[in-house]
Length: 111
Image (cartoon, rainbow, N blue to C red; front, side, top):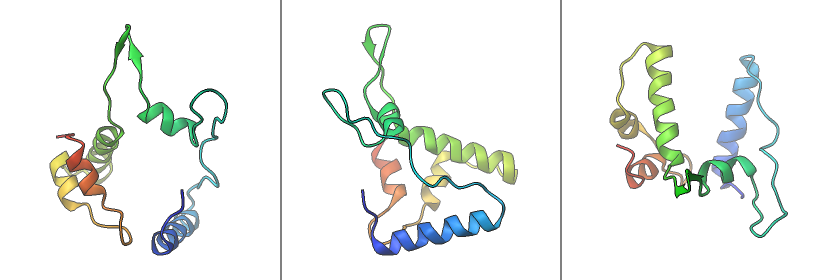
């Protein structure tokens, strides 16, 4: 997956800023798994987004809902601000020419 040049620049600048602030930043993503019937580029993304069976039945899950909950919890714990998932989605901006995370959350029926 390749990012738009403007998004890549923002991403690289954010990593530099986080490192300057003393945070550890990973240099690469989770490994891929090219074996088996359905090769995957990123095993963590496959685990989070792929199908899962629990007690012999399909288990529905949505990665967007999980990250939305995590954002709300982070804002509550670290900024001491009680914020709903709906408010987080309403405040989502746009990164680059095509990445609109708020639209992803609205389409995923997380709230």
